[in-house]
Amino acid sequence: MKKKLLPLLFLFPLGVFAQDVKPDSAASEPLKWEVGLNTALAFIADNDVIYDDIFLVGRNSFSVYRNFSGAQIGLLVEGGLMGGGDSWWISPQAVVNYRIRFKKLYAYGGGAAGYVREQYTDGLHGSAMNGFVTGVQAGAVYNLGKRFGLNVEGGVRFKHMYTNVKIYNDNFGVGPSYTTTEVRGHTDIYFPVSVGVRYKF
Image 1 (cartoon, rainbow, N blue to C red):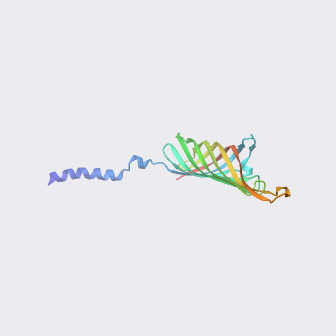
Image 2 (cartoon, rainbow, N blue to C red):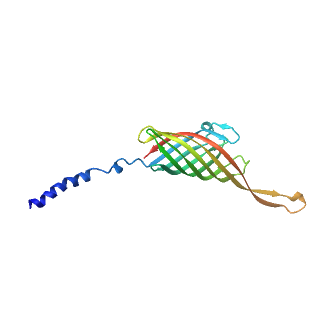
Image 3 (spheres, rainbow, N blue to C red):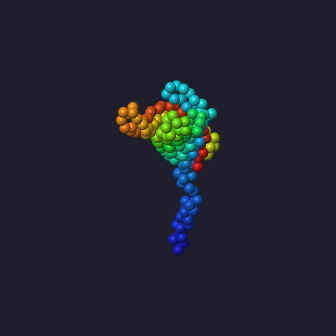
């Protein structure tokens, strides 16, 4: 009987130890989700004009990312006012970034693509335009602690906008008048630079 109990006494402490100690991967698992709020420092258009977006409220963004060991994917929503008036724009985008981690920060770079809507109140462009945007970005997040960080980012965006315009033609009074619909649009390139905060959870 004693010979049968002796092996059990050796196995019992090992079983308790295995239950109390967590695996290294679970104990050191990083925070996987990250949200951010950014505002633009500058909004540089292709005509080399630099706008101060802090005062024009031209570009702000909210982002949600899922972090992996060397990458992050997420949703970015940009938007703001246009022309200092009541006209506005909004652009939800899908983002994929490659991350390089350092001791106090991580650097990233990647691409983004999504939808754009511009709503006008001045009547010069019609009521609204729709389109799509693509581009690349690079930046860094400096960790202030386990959860909070500071973010700086720069990039380039290509935006193509289009709308349907109705054109009335009176045929110079010599025939019946008629209305046609045309698709009009334009393509812009701009270089946003922004700063913001990040929170991990």
